[in-house]
Length: 256
Image (tube, rainbow, N blue to C red; front, side, top):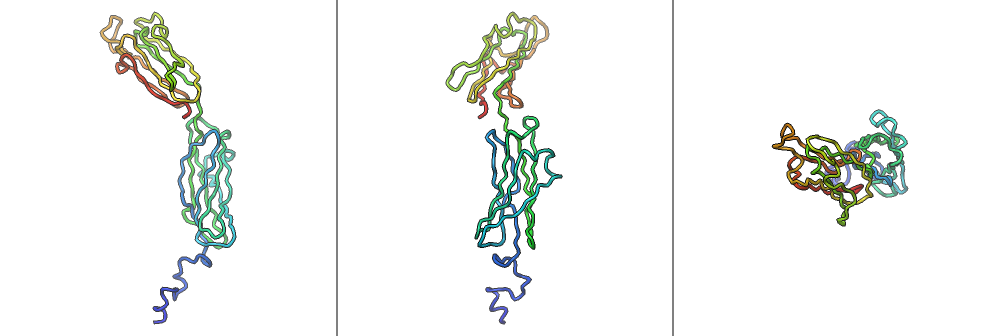
């Protein structure tokens, strides 16, 4: 009867005690375990939340380790990792991870993994103790490449690029891109450097039938022209064929 009357205050069996913020076992866990990050040119610091089962009158620090087998090899200079910091009297804290843009190597768009494990404190434990950070270097690209493949009437084809104020910042008039082109499919390429900002790319067909040759005396019908405006692995605009009509426009941004 005594045990029953005291059940709301404490357990009669000490093995049933699950949580004691002052005298119980200290256990650590990540509050979030999966991250996908684009690292900007100005670098990036993230703070991973960490929970703890006990409290203390003083601040506490706990260690973490990098899982070398699961982490992408050769990336140790790309990031730095501190320790878990739990403020006094709190049940949660953070782990700071810093990424340095300039140190991140590899190809544009290449993703890498950083895997971090919590280290159990003396006499303590961990759960949800693995955090995986997948990251890549943000693509900073101002040097664009334009490729235009004509249909067999290339003298009809041209293009413009206008800024967000409507000013033409690049372009070639129809007749100048493929001067004198008739009955031959040719390729035009141009390098275009643009400052950061918002733009509109417009492909032009002066005849108005798009980038396709039909019912012609030069050979097979349905000879299709194409265009592609890109920067590194970023495709800002692409298309071709009859859908172009007299003009086809695409809005895009450089380093938004």
